[in-house]
Image (cartoon, each protein chain N blue to C red):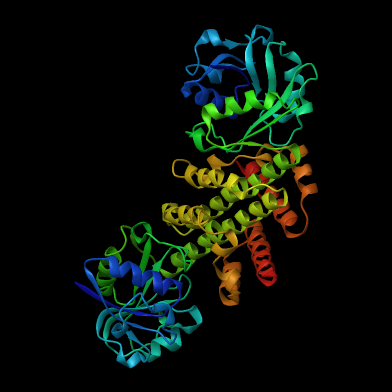
Length: 252
Length: 252
């Protein structure tokens, strides 16, 4: 049995708590949060602490707070854990207070409060100041996920950057597509099979092999007609991404 | 039983042929293609015609050729079908030769040659010059898909434009993410659960509700760090999409 303490009450903290509560081989010894209303109904009241000093001993403390708060929050934590790891995709482990054995436990996923997350598929990227601590972080990660990787800071930052493109920016493009449908009095539901297919295609082919569309075909008539239907930032995005696809194409 | 003739041998034509071959209530009477090598092994040789005049009678002829060829190809077709429909997302039905009863049968999907397409989920958007012909086009569409919509030209063009954003551009962003992983000696496999989740999230929430990331949080430290890791068109895309997300955010 591994024991874990969670620090935070934001989306990542909540989803980690939910995942660990479901895992058989891990026990949450406590959750520390200044604002604990988000934890109500999720964990028993006697496991929620608003004073860091009350946080019970655990194998691992996981700090799931905003990047800028890691330093300050970690300084408040009692020396009651073998490893203290943050969950940030971009911060070095030495942003954690020097009094702790430091590490990282970065789940590569997008977390929205109301969403259900199946952690078993979520890659967990771990790093530790002391190589011996990788084992306990790996064990903890394996209690919730089948995908655990040892990833250094530079690689983790690359993953975080890649995630912005394939998740945050992609989701924004979904929004543009939905808006175009709304304006044409069409249900955005019509786009969902295409969105699923586009995500599913790259299971068996690379994005370069999967690329289709007017930009790739250099279909100037369609590209010009599309540009005339757009304005503002959507038009700029269309132009830039069309140029980028065509530039890649010329590279091939 | 509905009968259909297919014109073309590109990705859309091939996937339509495959779908109709699987459907119980439709018969392919012939496939006309100038280059019929792509059809080998797919349909029996006696159903493939390289002279349009030999194409047997059918309820519907579906023209699945490049947009610019619709006019020319449709002029070659014998008057052997009740309706002649093209499969283009952007061309008006009167790009089909005036000698025919004209229509459109637009499957909203991305078609790559080597990919398997489950047509049952693909929205088929139909339009007809004569309202009475909508029925036969609808019946034909229902033989392969559960999602059939009557969509006018303006709406169809909007769908086609939206598809460029949610499919072609999204796929390009997947490529950028994969490249960032490759450079960092990481397997792009790590991104696939996130890509699936991002597509899956919008089943139950709007893209605006699903939006996460440094741009939305206005996390300047991370945005600046990311920009320093990028160059060329990826950097421009990062800047433009970050600005666009923040602009939307200020609208909310």
